[in-house]
Image (cartoon, rainbow, N blue to C red; front, side):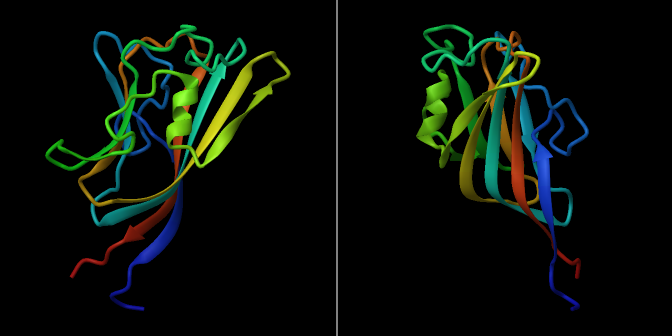
Length: 170
């Protein structure tokens, strides 16, 4: 039908560029310079995200009051999860002014608390699912800001899932 938006499903990791082409590794040193991974629609698109999946992979058991197996008392500064517009202004803080400093802090916004599994090579993988209804317009991004050194984790990612609406040009 002419004039109606085309839809397709999106499953993509947040990355350094926001378009899927950059580094997706969140096991980084964000101290003293924060590292931002993000996702945002291309020109003529709008994202309707319905789920975020946080994955923490480590070579030791998850410490609930720590972060993965890092820092038994948690991170010092923490991670942010927010939506910013094209001017860089925060338009939605998914953590309502809080930061994620401990593994358990993800429970503040989790719709399904994670499961911890040990892989055949001895790694511990932990997933947290967040159900959401985020509309990300063109020029805006969902940002995950890492403000501590979490580089000792084996892997750390956030996957976004939802619909991509292609808006027809008039």
